[in-house]
Each structure stands twice: as structure tokens, then as C-alpha cells.
Amino acid sequence: MGNMIKSTPIKNIKFQKYRGFYEEQTLELKPITLLFGRNSVGKSASLRLLPILSAASRKRRGNKSVLDYSAPALRGANFGDIISNGQISSAMTFSIEWPDLSYQFSIRNIDESTEIVTNFCLKNPISCFSGEVSVASNPKAAAPDYSSFDIAYDGENRFDIWKLEGIRPSIAEGTEENQTAKQLRESLDAFGESVFWLEAIRSSVPRFFELTLGSDGSISSDGSGVAQALRQSSMVGDGISEAVSAWLEKTCNCMLSSSASSSVAVFNRQVFPFNVTLKSGAQIAVKDIGEGIAQALPVVTICHQARLGKLGPHPILAFEQPELHLHPTATVQLADEIISCVVSNSEARHVIETHAESMLLAVQIAIVEKRIKPSDAIVYWVNNDDAGTHLRPITFDDEGFPIGGWPQGVFRETLDQSRRLSELRIETGVN
Image (tube, rainbow, N blue to C red; front, side, top):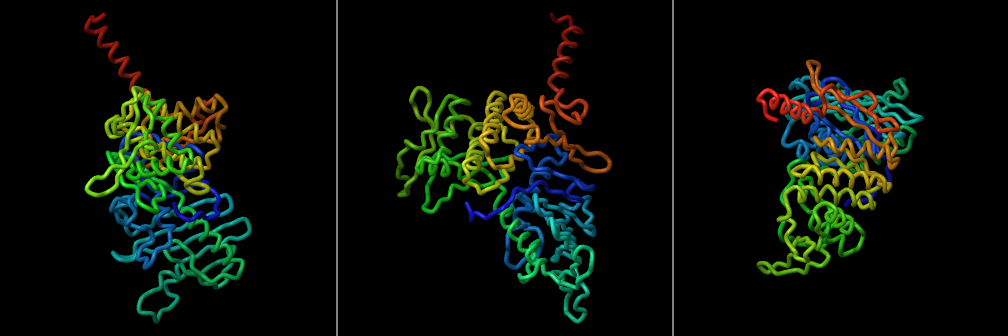
């Protein structure tokens, strides 16, 4: 699952002129961060910024763009697709903040083949650097060197020049300034490996699967690989498959049977059945126990991988609609399972886009029961108006009541339907 790099958890990300977010927005990363809102308001765009910036943080060869447009979370988009209102002459601004470091940078599109960072600001408790691209630094060059930056140290021009590769500083080490750049590179390296994103439309689980040598238990953004991850867990006895099996037993009265599954030969290949065991003792394929349960399996598995330290020191779990296809009762079980991982001192940040009120209620109940602290959770109501899209933060007091309050009418749809049904019965004389 990648090399483990020493890191500190990210506190928040900020963004401006990205998608519908024309004004600067802040997304805090708490142990539990929930994103609510109506359809097509920007919830998914907010959450996908985590894997997008994570991909941009990785070292790439031959960078011709700042963002990695091959990243799955961008879904084939280009700069013009993600800049607010398609204003390709404008610039997007992003900020990543750690407890001891903050990094803000702006991205502009110069032409169809050139995307650059135009300026950045890098701060830690003892240093502050700001840089602007030195387009005219070599007027005799055949083309401007957009990777060179004139650096000001604490507001005073020191005539230093830094290079950027994408969003990563690439300069010689040795001075105090360079040590800060090194700190940023190490933090970006860790961020590049820390985001585990599950998209909303996940792939169907397999009926049979192969377990190849060297498999590291990774689960892809579409949920594929969950069967291999659970089989590998049962083989090494790390507790992940047992935890997932316990969730299955609570949710649908069956248990994971991968630890007892023997391999079979299919077209001269050794494969394993992906089964569960029913209360009767019969085994059936996970594929046949319901789409909702199968869709939730990658969510539960990744949560327990993070809880047991398999995903690095400070993983960020970014889930789109984890409750997809689940019955409300199963959604409650899923919400409680995520809460239980937080209670078990998981180092993960669970960032969840959801339409399920039970996710919110699970957080509030956990606060009232003193299993988590109010500071462990934050909810964002995502909404848009004439000025653009906004993230409205909502926190909680010690009794689980929201601070700041919900917008009027949120989660009242069922109540309104019940009232309408009652009124119709009165109008039509139905008792």
C-alpha cells in the first residue's frame, strides 16, 4: 500500500474559482466530516478535490500540467471544465494546511498545452516564503521558463530563485529556506499516498477472484480488489476480515467465509469463490446477497484497514454515498460501523458525501453518548445561489445539537409527505 512516509494530518484544504465555488471555501478534515446538500450543488466536487490534489502532489515525470488530468477523480476533465464559469483566462487557487505548515498556490492556463503555477505562499512557524513566476527572468530564451520563481522571504526580496515541478519545489538543499521546501516536499509525498477515494458508482463484486503474488490489499476507487483484500486479511490474520464479517452478521445475518474457501481451477487458473455463510450453514456468493451490501463492503473494509494502520499514519478516506442501495436499517449499521472505527482511535479522516440522515444522527448519538467529542465532527451543507456554491459549516455542542443551525426545510421531506397524505385523507373523507 505504498511506502510509509512520516507525516502530520492535514487540517483543511481551501479552494477558490474551482467548479461552482467562485469565492474561497474551507473544507476541514475532522475524524468525521459529512457533506450534505441537494443534487447537483457541488458535494462530489468538494470531496473529489481530495484525490485530485493528492494526485497532483505525487512526483511525475515530464509534467506538462500542474494537475494530473489522468487522475480518475477528474473524470476526463481539463482546466476549462473545472475553472469557475469556464473562465479559462482566470486562475484557481488552492491551499493545503497542516498543523505546522501551509501552502497556497494559484494555477493558470497559458495555452492549450501549458498550465502553470503563477504564485505561491509557503509558511511554517518560523519562515514565510512567497514566490511569483519569473516569466521575464531570461528574455533571450526561446520560451519563458514558467517553472522559475522569484522568492521573497518574509516579505523582503532576497533575489532567490526556486523551481517548481508541478506543485512541488525542486531546489538544492542547504539553507533554512530550502529546509522549508524539503518539509513541503515530504508533506506532499505523504499527502500523495494518504487519500483513499471510493466513487459513488462502484463495480460489482466478483463471484470468483484470483489472488496474485505481491498483492498488497489495495482497493481501487471503484471498489474492485475488495475480495482479494479480505482473502489476504484472513490468510495473515490481521483482524480486518473478522471485523468485516462481524459487520455482515449484524447487518444481514451472514458471515464472511473467505477464510474457509478453497480454491478451484477455472480455465487452468487458480481462483477463489467470494462467498458468505448463512445462519443455516449454506454458502452463497456475496454477489447474491444484495447490491447494497456488496457496494458497502469496500467502505467497511477500507475503514478497518485504516483503523488497523494498514493505510499509513494519517489516511484520508473519501467516500461518495457509502449508503448506496442500502436499506435504512443497514445504513444505520454502516454509520455505526464508521463511528466505531473513530471510537477505536483510528487515525483516519472520514470525509463522506451522503444523503442519509442516519449518518448525521449516528454522529449526534455518539456525541451524546460521549463516545466522540464534538470537535471530532463537522458537517457541511453545500448550497448554491447567484454568488456561486458555498460550504456552510455546522458543528455540535456537547448535547449533539447543531451550532449554526440547518437551513430551513432540511430533512423535512418525509414529514411534509406525511402531512400531505394526512391532508388528502381529510379532503377525500378517508378515515
